[in-house]
Length: 256
Image (cartoon, rainbow, N blue to C red; front, side):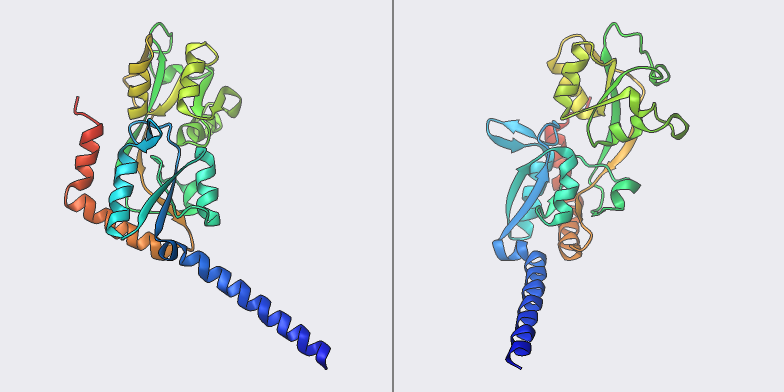
C-alpha cells in the first residue's frame, strides 16, 4: 500500500511542477518586471549600435511601450532567424526587428498592429548592368538570412522568385553589402532604410528606383502569450494616436 501511496505522491508532485512551470512562463514578465525584446541590431535606422548600446526606431518605441506597462526594457541582440524560435519558446517576450508580417510567420507567431511600412530595395554597384527589377533573373542575389527579402528572392520562379540556387543568405545586411563590393554577388535585396545607410557608407553603390516589395512591420509574440500581446498592442496604439511613434520615426528618417 505504501508503495502505491508513494507513486501517487510522486505523480501529484510532478503534475504540480508542470502546472507551476506553465504558470511561471505565462507570468514571467510581470514577476521579473522586465520586457525582453529580441532584435537583430544590424538594421539601421530601426536597430543598430551606438557604442555598446542598441538604439534606433524599434529600441525607442519598445522603451516607450515598456514604460507604459511599468516594465524595464531589456534588449537581446540575436541572429535574425533565431528571433521567432526564441519568442516561441518563451526565451524572449517579443520580437521587434523591422519584422514583416507574412503568412509563413503568422503560422508560428502572432503580430501586433503594424507600426511602420517597409520597402524592399535593391542595391547594386553604380556600373552594374542591372538597371531594373526585370534584370535580376539569372543574377546572384545577396540577402540577409531569414528576412522576407531572402524568402521572396529564393522562391521558385513560378512563385515569383529567382530560385534558391541564385540567392545567398548572409548573417546580416552589412556582410551582404561587403560581398557585393567584392563581386561575390550581383546585388543585395534589403529594406530601403538600411539600404540608404549602407549606400551612404560605401562608395560606388546605388539603389534601384523601383521597389522590390512593399510590407508592414509589426511586433511578434508567442501564440500562447495573448495577454502580453494585448497589453503591448494597446500601448502601441496609444503611441500611434498621440504622435509619439511618428516623432521617433521622424527623428531617424528624414523627409527627402
